[in-house]
Image (tube, rainbow, N blue to C red; front, side):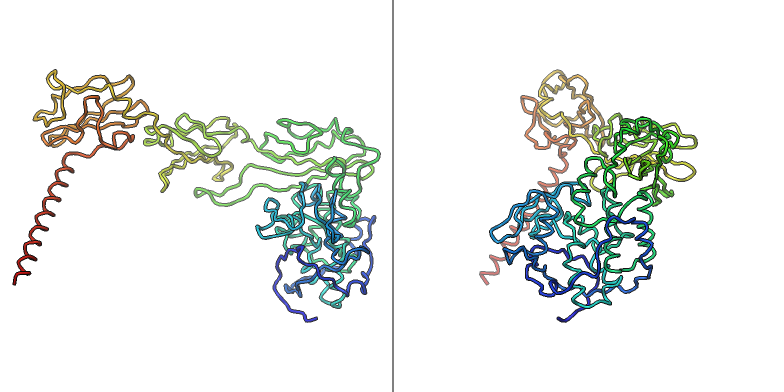
Length: 560
């Protein structure tokens, strides 16, 4: 079998890999997973070595025949699905047809599997037939190759590729996100499973005598610091351990036989939770700092290990450095028998209730809509903060920016010592007017007490009107002998414009007070003036004259 070297990449292990590998039956694993041993101790036995080679002999491997004794089509993928999924059913050829992965170990969610069906909701592509579940090498094959497998025989590498001890059924999206990363580059999003994941990685590397690089070693050690009693586990144990985690058990060593979360009724934190209690997995706090467990509130013999998960970051914003006042950490509470009885996710910021109103309208989900008149004159003085915390040295800096799509962006930066610690932002648009020309049907125009029929007026000031609805206003202006009347709705929208003067007015009202102009029904769109109409007529006349002249010239030429 010829090897070919390609760059590291994430290649999904799909259901299409069906042909048997005869080599696997002949090659036994070098050793076994040291299950039940201290993960911290086993990690200390792994050699630390740089991994500078980024190549791999990754081939389009086939799944080895798993020999269920009945069906030749049954392969390693089916074996892992049968092991990790619940309620599996099978096709006539023995292959797994359906099942449920619950909980899915990398995300804590649930994946309903149907063999041969695309499942885009779980990260599969429209053409994928993996049912949203892929079989992951817990220690990615490329990672294993570069930490020792490249020095083994091809048969040993093939054996690793299809070793159930190295394989786990997981959500396709999570597997695609992981790619070929080691523990320093990727960890499951389900926090409760991270200790188990580290123990799986350590056990597999121990079985195959693989190395770890320094960053990988430190990442594994940091994870185990949250669960020092963690034992090495195998992939065959994940299904039951994940179920224990879902029901509130601890990581690594299963549920404590002596202690439970009810022993933590007295637990306190360095701030008061907004809601929830000792039984809650996630707690929010109004605090401008990291919140931790008050160790003095723990029962005797208990301890807590707290680790920052994320924290302030520093992109630039508005010319300032940024360090948002958002603090996250995890707190693992460990019973005297070494079991992690409860893991808390603690989230704190002083800005939970801070919001912005724009010209009196509350911004919701980053959006706000205000009347057209308010939108046209919107300025930073129209931005109001509500629910802001009182923090010494913090100033609020509002701004309004016009956007190319006709909307405006409003922003309030909260600045402390020239650093942005919070911001509010909303995209603002003008509300569609609820008024139209139909609201002006009662409008009547008169000249010297007589109805005005739309005729030219030598004295435009003689035109008067009546029947304007309550709350409406008129902007009255005269320029170059043309008087313009803009009838404005209560929301500030100009609904109708009338021009009158010596030139014939384009806005002749009918007997019912309306006009035939389409723009009369469009808010804020003024009607065309008589000057435009006159110029159009002149242009048309000039075109006809030129055309007539050209016709005569052609006729004359034809008689020559």
